Length: 350
Image 1 (tube, rainbow, N blue to C red):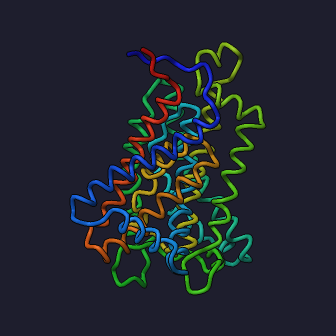
Image 2 (cartoon, rainbow, N blue to C red; image 1 turned 90 degrees about the vertical axis):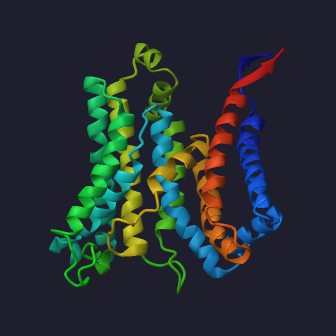
Image 3 (tube, helix red, strand yellow; image 1 turned 30 degrees about the vertical axis):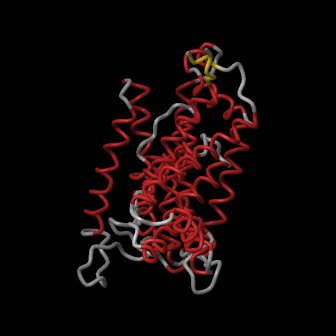
C-alpha cells in the first residue's frame, strides 16, 4: 500500500471532506458521551436546541461566532501564504485595548457615532497589524521563525494589557476591579436585536470573508500570496516580490485579528479585561483549518464552533455531561480535518 499524490482534486471531494471530518468527530465524541451513560443523539439534539431553539440562544450563537469569523479569517489569510501567524490572541487583545485608549482623545469621544465607530475600528485594526509586522520583519531580515515570535507575543501582550488596565487605562469607577476605562458611548456598536447582545459587528464579520475571497481570487496581490504559499522559491523565481507580499499579508492578517478585538469590546463588553477572550485567537487557527483556508468557508466553520460552545452549556445542564465536550468536538474536528485534507491530496494505491 502506498500514497500517490492526485493530479487534481475533484470539487466534490473538496466539499465533502470537511463534512466527513465533522461527522467523524461527532461520531468519536458520541462514543465519549455514551461512555458517560448518556445518549449521544439526545445530547446533540440538546446542543442544537440550546444554540437555535430560542431567541436568546440564536443571538448568543451569532454573537459568539462574530469574533471567531474574524480570527479564523486572520489565520486563513496568513496560512494561505505560509505565514504561520499563531499570534491571533495577542493581536485580538491589542486591538481591543486600542479602542478605550483611542477613545480618550476628545475628538473621538465628541465625534458623531459614525465617525467614532470608524475611528475606533481603524485603531483596533492598526494595532493588530503593527503587532504582527514585527515578527514578519524579523522573519524576512534574519530568518527568525514566526511561529515562536508570534506565539510568545501572545503572553507579552496579555501582560501588557494587564499592566495598562491596572495603570494608565484603569477605570476609576470600577471599585478597584482591573478593567479599562469604558468605550465612549458614541463608539458603541448598535444592537441588532433588542434585549440581546447581538450587535452590528456581525454584519462586518459576514462581509469581510467575501471581500477577502474577492481579493485572493481576483487581484494580483491575491495571486502572489497564493503563489508564495504554494512554493516560495518558485514564486520568487517567477518574479513575485516575496518580502512585499508577506508584509501585506501580515498587515491583512494582523488587522483582521485586531479588528476582532475592537468589535468585541465595542459591541459586547464595553471595556477591556484580561478575560475578554475565551481563546478566540487560538480557536481561529482551528476554524481556519476546518474551513480548508477558504475565506467563505470560515463563516461555516465559525458557526459550527459557536454552536458547539453555546449549545454545550445547555446540554450540560440538562444531561450532566461536562460542557468541555464542546472543546473535545472542536479539537477532534481539527484532527479529522487534517486527515481529510491529506486524503484529498493523496489517493491510496496497492
